[in-house]
Amino acid sequence: MRRIFSFSMISFGLISITAFTSHFDTARADSGFTDLLTVNFDSDKEGTDYRSNTFNDGRFDYWIRSTDVTPGGTSTGPMSDLDTYSNIQGTGWFVGKDLDEDNPEGKGYLMLKTLDVSAYQGGKVQVKALLGGNTFDRHRYDGADFLKLQYAFDSDIADGANAVNAVPDRNDIATGSYTTFGAFYGLGTASPVNSKSALINDADLDGDGDFAGNDNDNLTATDVITSDSLTNVMTEWTFTFDVGATDTKVSILFLAATTGSAEEIAIDEIVVSAKEGVALPSSATVAATALLEGAYNGATLNTTLNGSLPTSQPYSINGHSGGETAGSIPAGAVDWVLVELREAASAADALASTRKGSAAGFLMSDGSIKATDGVSDLSISLSGHAGTDFFVVIYHRNHLPVMSAATFSANATITIDFTTSAATSYQGASAVASLSGSKFGLIAGDADGDGDVDGTDLTTWRTQNGIGFVYNTTNGDFNLDGQINAVDRNQFQQKNNAKTSQVPST
Image (tube, one colour):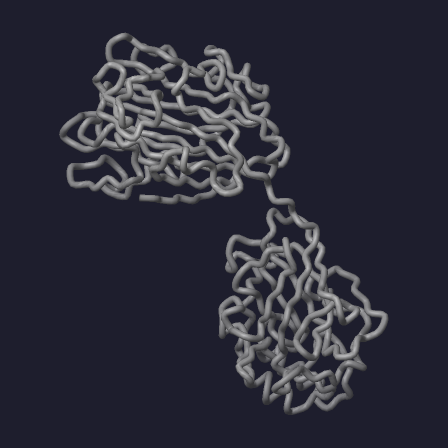
């Protein structure tokens, strides 16, 4: 069974966790990741590939590398007192029980050698490991018990490990400043037998196992334990975390705590890999197509205003600071429009504050939006963005704006057509006008460009009605025919009264 958990840390970016059973030989690093280190415990790499605070009291408490594995990957542990574990890979594994007894540090530390990630800045590190814990009827896990996976970059790394391929001395293994990127916490009572218990995955990293039963408190005999927990079947878990733009070295730590004699933690094959970050584009090329309800004649857009269009863009009122100008107005140009790119996690979050770039250009009679030469696609300079995917917004001075329902990657030309389906637009049919020929366009009637078709627009129309046409940003000529008359009021402002922009604004 494969389960995927995703969540965000404010300071450290996206972290995802996946659990599934698979041998590393057949399921290496995920696509795009390059393996950096494999630790399988089949041979003793203590002090070379990893450092631990190994101890063994000679009776029942220990934190050690064990080679007690029978054919088929099964073991009852180095002292034959553990639960029976299966799916152990190879001939060695790392295992611990009752880590607070006879252990000077009170916890189990297993720190991998420091790895060079300078080639993966802005990318991700992936950690895969086979993990296990005892079954639910052999337990004493409670809230004090845990297994954490942690990382540190550069100056935060433990003393003695702050160099590529270095491991710390045992005395320094608890130093440094490490961040948790994966965790399992005890959930149960300290009393065995009369209740179930488990180490439960903490996917949201809030310090508590993510179990919904019993108000996320102690498990009972009737609770059903899912694959969100560690069991005596060694199971592969996958974790990823971000590499910062200036990070060069990473140290990875497995930290375990158990406080009872029947609490067990097992670790087997560990694979660390990394993926390069995607270079952020400095600009985006946009090939967009849109129609205006007012100017649409059933086949194309009217170009009546072509001879009256200004040579400079009119969208400073929309917060656009570009100085686009045209040496001459291209033949076939209908009007100026503004194209904007926003970066957000969802369309609902794509507020005006998420704008990363914009450019003004000409809407042509066929609906295509072009640069000031009337031929080239728009080029939009980008700044302040963290990725490559953007929502596309189209503005016209007296129509309601429209925004794409999905993001588009700026790694290639962004091609979007708002005319063929209402589903292309965020909020669908409520965001666009339905036109003849099964086409869709921006809704007419917003004379003042404030995102609402309302009485203010009617007042603007009345003020301008019958007066000679003058091109401006506040304009009641909704059908772009160079006249402001009853047609503009009746067929557009009145028809669309009370409609509002579906583009998120604040």
